[in-house]
Length: 228
Image (cartoon, rainbow, N blue to C red):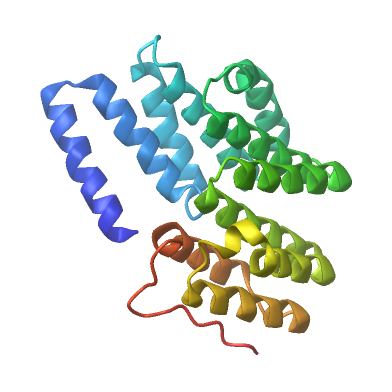
């Protein structure tokens, strides 16, 4: 992540110097997407900077920025504001021709339901999102969404449900076709961790970065989950 942020900062300086505002807006949204899980307040500031620079006709970038804002507001524990943003942008993802963007909109809705305390509805929608990821062969999204669902259950103390998430990741026929051995080992370790309640949210953030980069091909150094 530090390398990605450094590259984005260089691009930001270049586009500011050239007064290339649409490109700068895109870089700011990308920056927010990288840091939303670790520095949500800073990500919100990046989005505040980006939004006035997004061309009116760029509905795709507008939608990305709005969904990121929902995530940021959830992370800083302002769910009612997140709900307002979600309602404001819902027409953008429901009408979007990209199946992936429609699914990402529903995932944001699941996170919002969880933040607002609607546990059963959130879990149902999380599961539906994973189903749609797999249906559309969005396997990277499926793995990341399963990890987020796992983290949600661990945080809620629902360890049996967290274990079932791992079992799905390990046994789903479609996912099995793209799961390399290193990734299979990771899900097995997460299953063991759920059974022992031995996982932290910080570690899950690190594992999300690993999945984001290595869901398709193994890393040189595999991630290790030390069970305490």
